[in-house]
Image (cartoon, rainbow over the protein chains, first blue to last red):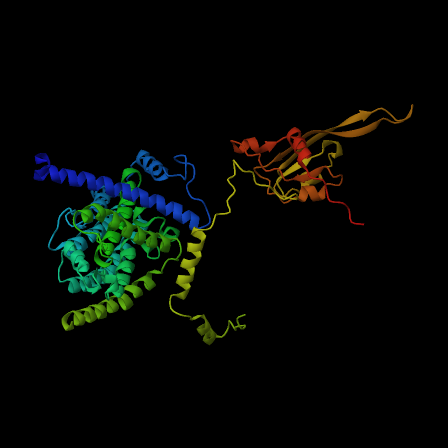
Length: 340
Length: 168
């Protein structure tokens, strides 16, 4: 196994496996979106592609998108226009580097993992703004500005919800946060009970985090930036071909990413009672995957149920409700942390 | 049963206010139920839709009943009916009598790319030459192929359902 010990070999392997898993995951979520959405609207959804249940639909869609001409409008700022999808995609992918999938299964166990996640995920705002500004299209511009306003507004409750967790766990490493949730809280007979943070007073933080995460993803009910009925497709209007595919896959990859972070911080991440040692490394990814699937399903479920918030209602929710609530929540958590 | 409300009275809107987020939760429940219900979908090319007997599928023509009176063509709001005809001399019924003239139909086309299925032609026909048929599978590759001639319209006559018995 000496071959696998080299730093560069490990790096290449980690990146290759990570990319494969994340992009496959994004395709699976796209399939789940169209299929679940179809059934929620009493339709069937994709049916023919691939022979059964339309399982090959996302692959066929991706192949179709890739064949399309990569158009750039005359008035576009070509360099920025071409680069924007890569910024969004990169920020969606880089988040996965610090998500622990087992006690030893982590791309990079940073001491400031939480900081890294928040910093990287807010880079996608930059990509969206670049796309909106450089397209040379008024719909794109309005969409980009709305996205910027929305993402700035919801970045705050997101960060504040995370701060509450960091206070309770006393660490900023995501591995550390999972281990803190894995510690024995009390024992019933000989059985050690460890509870994830959602059952340990972080339910409000969890709710705020998920609302802000859906807003960060610009998904319904917070999809004002790409509101089809008024902005055609917002900042995506002028994109086609491989660049549109990047945005599209990036959106679903970051959906998985944010769900994974929520699962790690509030639902106990890879850990589940009774899973320790080597089996934690083997079963961890599966446990995390199940938790992520539940959260992704809820996000899809919301998308196919609720109407869109108006722009002013959207800002109201962030500034007048979520941020004060998150601040009070931090104060309460901090008091409990110090008092007990 | 909810009590009747006065929509002009703004204070009455307070009845809209229920438990916070109850409406959103109800919506979630509706979509969740729909997710686990079999969708009422007819898989069309494999399974055929069964139209109701009086469905307005296509207009069929009985050539023998047509007198080329042009009423349908003139009443058609879309002007999608094309009729041409000529007179044919018939031998006199008695020797030494006057030869009769009979109108013969040369062309009866309906442009289904224009037809809006209003049924005025069927209503207005004084000799019951036009009928509604529930047949619906007559799509074509191009718009210009939707101009169907009288032979085609006559074929659809076989699909016209029997009218219900006359009430006494």
